[in-house]
Length: 351
Image (tube, rainbow, N blue to C red):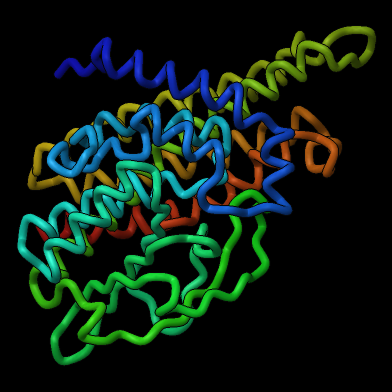
């Protein structure tokens, strides 16, 4: 099978890359430490470009794009360590709400309003997996909408959509200062429930698979950024009168990290295609993608930190911004070990 992005997809990716080069520098990331707003001027720029509403159906003002179209854009978000909740809003919430609208779940008019607001850049959404109690979620502080799920009760799994006045958000410490976490406390009720039973279970499963692939795509961008930073540092850092990049041991470290990344890329791209096409093995492919991407990112983090030496983790060095995001995302929506166990269970069940 031959897979390649179209010229239009590449042009869209390059446009997003240029915007983030201009508006999401490491200085901008540091500024976000003290102003963790979910919607910023940068968010408005991305919305005007069509990025935020990329997966919103055309009938609701979006571009109606699939996950394959989003993957290159999410890679760029990862490369820049974008603080805003693009992944949750565009890759997860918009497709889920679109499916709810198509199934006539809840108030169709209200769901349509949410989709139109997302497409216009007027809404940042946070999506949470089924979890008990107050769930720490990235981007929850300042979000405009919360899509949350339960996995128990007499009606089985449920999906609830809540506005800020229906939840209590409490900031919690986070490893990554650009990816703020907050605990979201809420009480399920009939007024917020949009789906339950088999429909909710199906949507929760598909959303988890999309989250694994979308997070994997961001990890690809992060991984490439860390390898590039390490290679650039190796060209200028002198040891024994020579750049450390001239030493074979350093070359092997960087080459090994790059090889790991190149193995992860097709897994992520293939999983995105499988989900878009509704392939029967799409869920397994999503887990393979997340496992490969998480391992590539943690390996690149280890190598780039080793190449930089102790300075790489200091507050003044930009590398730590990407190290911390890689470590956080490698565990988000399932670690490599969890997804490998899921793949094993799937293969055993099908044997």
